[in-house]
Length: 300
Image 1 (cartoon, one colour):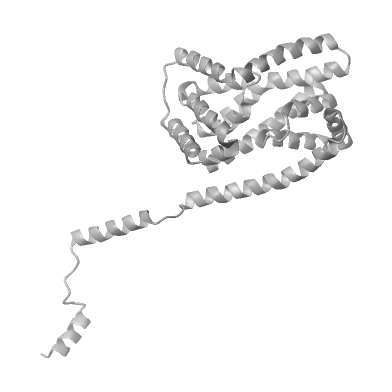
Image 2: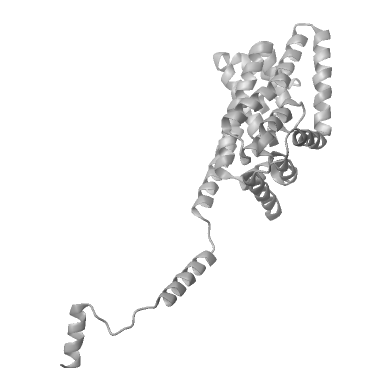
């Protein structure tokens, strides 16, 4: 049989003169391919989704912020911003509630408006009870939005939203949320104390193992006393009940001042009490999220 005939016969029977690759060489090739793939720079699919989500959020924030800033500039032409804001809410008629919800949403999500001004205007228009309920509803909607946004985008997004200075403090605060056994009590107490950085808490709690419904209920209940106190103060002042206005303002104003000045010491004190009531049980997920937040700070 000639060489050409042998080659034709081998081709028909699927035989080959080449030796098959051994298992070791095959595994070595796969390892090299894996190493080269991992060494290739680029974003993972999850990182791309997070990046796109962040861009969409920034775009929406800029668009909404543009109209709100223009609105605030229009009402800011007068000396009394609260009075101008109150007049704008009243002029909106039935849509005044939606305007209040939108202002409260922006105040919590991107903090371009002082919360006290918004709450005071809502209290003047709708009174103690309804003003407080509308403000709480706006806070709840904002918390739901932020919670699921942080769940989707993770710790790097939180570091970017809070800024470098707040992110350093946030990384410390996040350590307080690693005790999963008493996480609910910790969150409720911190939201209950006036003057605490609730905007930062709203961005950090989603990084903990706390369930969404628990956070929405406890944070809303914790916010309620201070919110109703604010709407009561402005309502009492508007109707001339200056004594009641002064008493409530002094109580909650004093507590708020203490919360603003000593918020980190208060958190440390609350954390120690919680640990005494229940032994510290560190949640691995919460610790990992805290580490990610610190890494984001260092990279920025």
